[in-house]
Image 1 (tube, rainbow, N blue to C red):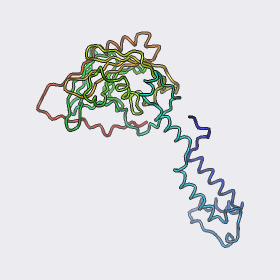
Image 2: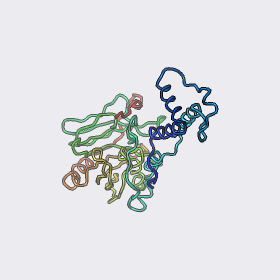
Image 3: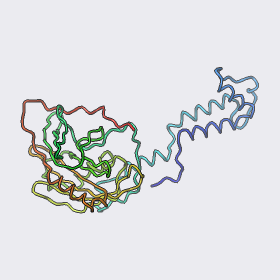
Amino acid sequence: MTSRFPKITATAAFSCVFFMAVTLTDPADAFVLHNRASSSRPLAATADDAGAEIGFVKSRRDAISFIVAGTAALPFLPTAAYADAAAVQDSLDVENFLRKGVDLGGNMGVSSQAGKSRPQTGVVLRDGTEVRQAKDGSVAAEILTGTKEKPVAVMTSFSSPWKLETGPVFDVECRDKRSGDGIFVAVTENTGGKRIGDLPNSFFLDRLFSPTGRFSFYGPPTDIKVKKSTMDGTNKVIELSFSNLSQSTNAEIPRNAMLVATIPEGTDSAVMLIGSANAARWKNGASKTVKDSLDSFKALPSPKTNLKLRAKDRSEMFINF
């Protein structure tokens, strides 16, 4: 729910506190405060101040104390800005929108991005390997599933006409920088021993639309609809639509997406390939591009070796704008 109160910044709040303090002091004292604050000498009350009382502020010393106390309280002010940000981040409930068929929870907001860690796709790259794309568009990446104590190596591969991204935001992802269309790999939580056909759609979509998911990087998506969910052999295919926040216009843009998920033999997590595009481009050929990539997707156990399985250290990868 949108707050009826104006958003308060720390600077504005401090200005109000300072104005109140100075206003409650007589004009002469206010002038002295200004002069002394701009000099290198410490502030000190004079004997003339002892008997002066204007309202509940008795002297320049009281005014200064009032300012200091007000400033110290600024971090604890329940501002609407912080309240709104928290509400936006927590507004998405995957289970809820899947039960109702659509999420109508309010507009998206842009969370603070400075120093923010990359989106969580569930992908853990194997140490000593690199994500590579051949000239023909074939992409290969070795990832780890399972636990730290018992990791399992999985070789993923697919083909895409879009360029492989290698920046700190991306794990295994190809994007068309001009249009924003893209395709990426993601890994679910532990399946709990269930077969892929027995897992609900929400199990797969939670990874994508959670507050830290790839599609939530600029704010939780809205109007999420599952259009179709089918089994294709040992793969699960889900078609969906949603609206996401445009980085350039700050407007909500309708998008379409499709994913394929499979559980590699000997693992307890589903590995997914997800492609999405602007709704207009989806109708004009992007859907075929995504579907072709999904048809080429494979996630198979890596060949056994004597090399120890270690996760690539990416703890230093933060996004700085």
